[in-house]
Length: 552
Image (tube, rainbow, N blue to C red; front, side):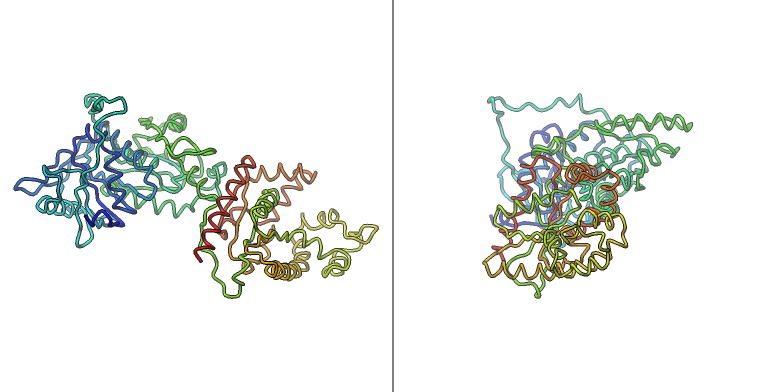
């Protein structure tokens, strides 16, 4: 059937199996849907819906119970292996305990209107029955805004009938899951919500199911991000809020959403008198209890604390968390292309030039040496800088004239330690030096690149600490930046250079911070782990670069 080869950008999956049976069927259902949908997959729960018979089925309410919550959590966890899918379980027809049900019937707008509607409903003959498909299409368009010329597909997933030990799978006991979820007028939840993932979606979905009127969402910002793993790769606050808002309005538009920045651990959770419940995970439970202690100090009623379990990440690798987490997603970005390469006709097509950037102590030199080992021509611009103000060098006389003869050793060479002490702690003096040396260094680097091209080099790594500060972006095709936590950089500088901690901090204070470098960078690498982990990142980046060059 030709539809099996089609791929749709967005789809709506209508699940009709009984809740207890669905839990066992989610994996094959999602695998079938993932073959047809390449981006957004909305999921609508309507257990017991029949698409046969003479009457057109309508959407009905499903009580918000612990069984429904468990199923939704499992659905998001099972969907995590399909990394291309942006799954959103729609909660409009999930009715919480305290809500007065409005009549279902109005069409809900979705941010990514589905192009295809899918279902686990099966006909007796196992075919794509036109009357059933027509009912499915009418059902979908009566509930949600869909694309014109909506396509419908009955999935017929391949269910596993036996467990590995040969026994038929048992369905979960419904009695233990069927208690209604208690609901509250105003609910609060907090998090970083970076690169909204399925763990976030579980947390937000239960928050929406518990809330009758308002959901207050605190989004970590500024100081709260300082200790986060790979904080430089965290999306800007506005971007995170945009993704969060789109998801929430899609899944439950009837709620009032209030999204606020969190610059401390508590935010409005300890001052808002209308809040009734706080939603936490296993690892943030202590924070929820601390909120209640603060509320008591402020003379406010305690919040009900609803704790959810963390979703396990079956794909996690070394140096990644076992739970589904944003830090793991950021870790997977290392070595990958984050921005399209520069297309500049003034740059020669060969060699392909990589500009290597990073703060002092970032481990840039070790990455450069490993890339040279992999086959790149390594051009150490920092070493060139020393050459340009060596005796007889093109910048020697200017540097001596600008900074005095007390910078000279007895043999007439410039004492780098003395010169460094004059410039690294004084921005004006540093600019004076760089105005002399940077233009000369750039010219020498261009000459060296031409020599490398003549020798047949295909990739040249321009190893330059000041690449971005000097404005040398137009000399390279891609910028690769090496990042490391500032405290680790300081530790390395102290060991390597034998200077004071104060001097090391001043040195870094005079350099462009990693967060700024990342904004201009095509590839990010991090050297905070063992050397073999660093080299794996470099090899990944190198392999992807070779693939890009081959495609060009």
